[in-house]
Image (tube, rainbow, N blue to C red; front, side, top):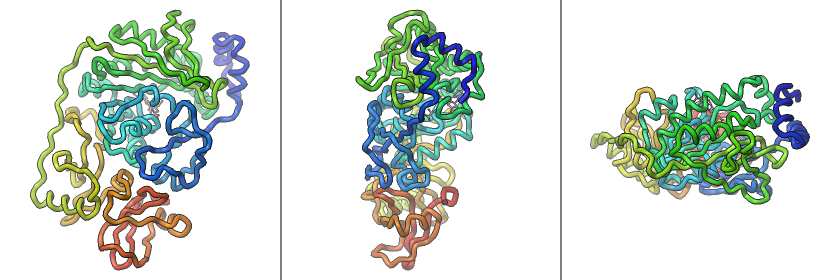
Length: 455
Ligand SMILES: C[S@@+](CC[C@H](N)C(=O)[O-])C[C@H]1O[C@@H](n2cnc3c(N)ncnc32)[C@H](O)[C@@H]1O
């Protein structure tokens, strides 16, 4: 791998005698990782080995996921580079909190935060580019997240809509990506000597909006996957000088992990910057990352109050259709009528304390848990519901035989089988977790696995 000459010169100068091991590590092997999803009922993977845990990630392991295997398809695992798994651990979202992931696609950190929140509270996950937001939304669905709003918006429009709304905000900034040179050599083609400064300018603009959405007393985590001080330590120095209501918080570097302090000498020399964290590929089995944790002081200004969403009541015919569906298909689901809302023909179970969607500039791709769709005199379950519930919440369940039935189900085929089931919807499971729906009719399980996902 030929590193850009200006990159070599820059890090020889910054790292001095450490630069040898640093450059050597960039031609070393890439360590792959994944996380187990604590939202799922059965947390024992079918095909993955859990013998190599990642020290800094509660549900993280070293290993490579098969993107077409049972573990990935049921949302039991999320494939994520080991160092990247440290970021959400630092934010440490709690059940019941309001959490924003501002630059979230494809969803590595958002799915990890969702696992910390265990379905309680509100996870707002945003991506500026609509195409990437769609991928984020699919990953949120596969992971079985029921309390997320997925949006596509510029941070300035989101900040107008949600001032001082969140307990915790993550900005995983779009950066110069130097930390990914080894994993993704294409990242080098975008790089030039001036690129980190350009990225830093963009990040300042995003941070101007991120800080507005955080409550007084709230926590902000900023991360990058670059080594560039312009986007890391210097960015934090800029933030603290521009927003004096913020202070740095120390990060637990997990003894023995190889995670290092930030470098005061690469910014204004203030020793406080050591509270930030650097993950270097020469020090640990992972790619390059930077993480900073900050607190907005309690006496910081509050923004204008954000209105809570109000939902229209269902007509009596629709309400009874919906109630019958829930009783006959997912009797174990806690779905109060006052949190259900209809968008077109689809019905969603909204997260608690959801704000009103008051800006047309903020496009909402997913709101809470999609329950299903009204079809004339019927109600059909949504694929998202199969991934979000545990098998014991469903009235009828059929566990696929992984050797003889998995491939045909995922391919969209019906299964002909005499089963002790009533006519109606059946949750199909694989490896102990929901993977989709089927309808049992006349000794046949009609396949409801979405056409766009079949393989
Ligand atoms: C480092 S990536 C996020 C990775 C993600 N957090 C994860 O863990 O999967 C940064 C994201 O910022 C988005 N982005 C680019 N320009 C942006 C801008 N001006 N404002 C907000 N986000 C932006 C990129 O499209 C990209 O998805």
